[in-house]
Length: 69
Length: 498
Image 1 (cartoon, each protein chain N blue to C red):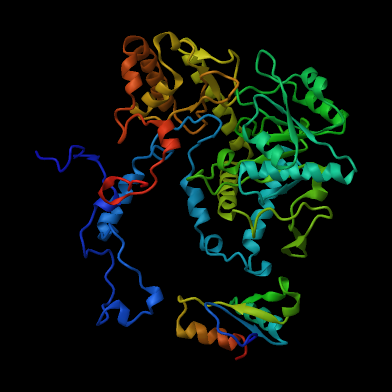
Image 2: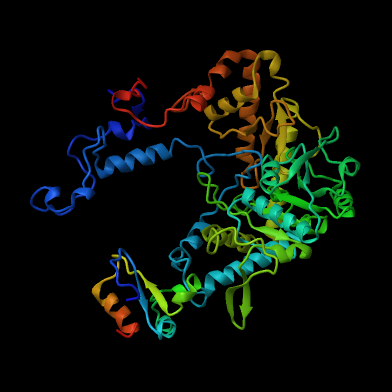
């Protein structure tokens, strides 16, 4: 987690491999998050994740796998 | 037979306000009940107090209520809609199918370019198509409406002159221009000077020459103009403006008269907007969303909004910002659903089809002009382009005005033409049939107009009372504007301000 605060409907993840993980996930058909560096240069290793209520457990598990969790 | 209400029998479906439907405790959706009261499960800040008169209605009540209200409107899906200057052509349903393809409709605006190549390719190709249609060098799809396109174009004009250390402050606009033109010029920081038209309602190069100075940044011209007449001296007018380093803003709102016939970029335009919701059959729907892409000639390309699409090998990306860009004027891919519809329309018609559309639109307008010329007074007795303008001059002796004609047309089942515009014509009645109506429909409209003209002589009072076959009759428009009642109150009356 990028921030140690309560969050509402989306959260930021941070890690050196964020960009590569996003790209690898996309190649597998999963848009895993939005890279935050485009708006916040200091967060160029962070991505924003929002899954909403429409995805089931299997989809969430797949997202976690794609992001290397 | 006992009707439930006076106007609710057979196919006459009167409709009460939603607040007058339902009964206490009725609801539209059943959800599994939790034991106990809502307060047992939800924090206090998420609970609301009862609202007086809040409708409690079933799903069929809701469906019928709004479906009936929707049928109280006249639209291109229900009738002929000759609203001049608005190009209310029929919007093909195939466009709706295209816009609802999941790859377009469900695409998230933040999808990475690499995963959105389909829609980017569509945008790229639409840019190419629009550039070809208008003879311009580059297109921006960003502006979200015609007037937004005008403002974007005028901001580019401003940036162009500012870059040259040339702080011009004046924009010339003919009296017959679209009403948004002066507003767009003013918003971009210019003062507006009017160019008078000649007796035929046209702008002459000599008239422009008299007012053109090195303080004039641009001339904004609508062609065909709002009288539906082609500006014959457009090329000479552009020469005069260009001769003093001014630019020509070409209002493309009336482009439906020019497809395949004239390219604005070849007759002097430096910048123009496309109204996709007019010319290219995307819906006008409730004030939006529209789409007003702009086209520019090469000298203005450095000022286009960014980012722009660029090819990187096989991939398109929003990666290029012009060096002197005025900046972004719309988020994401613009009103992309409208772009998909316009693209589908252009593909479906092809070049020959677009040309035929223009020719048929011009033919239909001239057919109406010729058929009604003996019945109504023509603002300009000349061959017109895609629309024709009559006045109420021959009706005045009978105390009948343009507004009465427009209201009576509703009783005949037609939407009314544009009225009291253009402003340069007293009592204007502006008819734009477009190319999508059959001769039978147009003949029926002409017959209705003839009936109304006869009624103006025989029974003018009946016209003053029109419409009588609509859910509500003649409205008190000044009172509605000055003292609008915008909400329902229990008991039907607003509480006294005291």
